[in-house]
Amino acid sequence: MKKLLSLFLVVGLVFVLAPMAEAYPDEMPPKPDKLSIIALDIDVDQFGEGAAIFEEKYGIEVEWMEFSYGALWDQITTSIAGGTTFDLYMMSNSWHPELGKLGMAVPLDEIVSAETLAEINERYFDITVEFLSSHGHQWALPGTAATVSFFYNQTMLEELGYYEPPTTWDEMLEICREAIDAGLADYGFFPGYLAGHEDGMVQFDIMLKLHGGEWMNEDMTEWTFNSEAGVQALTLMKEMLDEGIIPRASLEQSDWDNFHYFLAGNAPFEINWNFVHKMAQDPERSDVVDDFVVGHIPGIVRDTYTVLGGGGYAISPTTRSREWSFKLLDYMHREEGAIGVMREQGGAEATIEKIYEDPAAYGFSIEEYPVIEIYRQQLEYAGLRPSDDLSWYAEFRNNIFTPAMHRALLGQQDIEEALNQAQEEAQQMLEAEGL
Image (cartoon, rainbow, N blue to C red; front, side, top):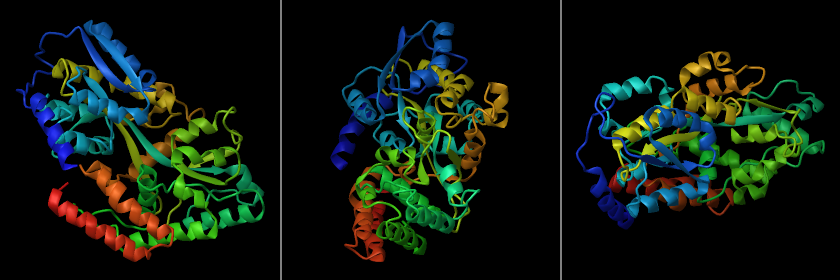
């Protein structure tokens, strides 16, 4: 990690330490002929309208280079390290601490004044600005804000005599047992606990926060995931595995691979990202089109909680023009972009607050997009993972926390002992490396 950091810091210094200008919006440098975007493969549909307005107004060609999410990180980092000229790229909310520290993104607050940036940020939900800020800088404008939702098979619940979804984890687990015993379901739900992968972090984050715990203390000087709440969270995860409420395959599966059980009608519940909603509505992919409902994750100590993901577009240090890139970025993440996101995501994931205050005024009826109100409420209690603060998050996830979590879930190590060992390793790194 230190060798990688040194390499990219050198690359970053070449580009990032050029003189900063606060030329937006009053004074602009000469226009480039083209601005290029390394984009997520669905983002032309989501943000293309805003980019087209910019293109027509200013006569600057916008070039989209589309990639799957799994290919984005390598494409971005190798392009910047090689000095390839491009201007904007899709930045996941979990990437900015590392990319920012490596000099692989231009801080927005070094392009525009604090007043201008604050005025622009007023359009967004506060937490979506927070989840793209670290090291004293804001690295992107918010474009999408994904949440983990609670999906349930209402028809199956009614067959078991339940006409309302569970509001507590105990109620949910009892319904799981009844559905399995009645032969209606193979499992209660099918989470992904994959080690060395983000799925395990997401699922533990949910359980930790529902039990009232946090990853770190408030001033982020001490890891606290080994608290009583952390032990209770991991204990419940192991108990569900051992009882068969969730399958042993959860230890080897990603959340992106296992939601098919719910779509096939083989589980009463699914706890997963918003993308499941769109697939559940597709009759070619789903047997529960008329059966499923989206709700809030049931509570334990906290009434409910969800994990926040998503991201926005950042400016490459190899850009043709910081100022014109910022202007394009601004156009992409205005209302046109938010509407594109809502259409693509069934009413969820847009970051502009006022659209959710009166969605009908923007063409989104609650009847046609029932997830809108659920999503707006989720943002009020959504939280972040350590990825939003930690520049060495991959090391923490892959080599410290999830291996310890797996040892405990497999019964190879006592739960409290595993968490304490992981906390000690993580604390040593925190004291040595900082955030």
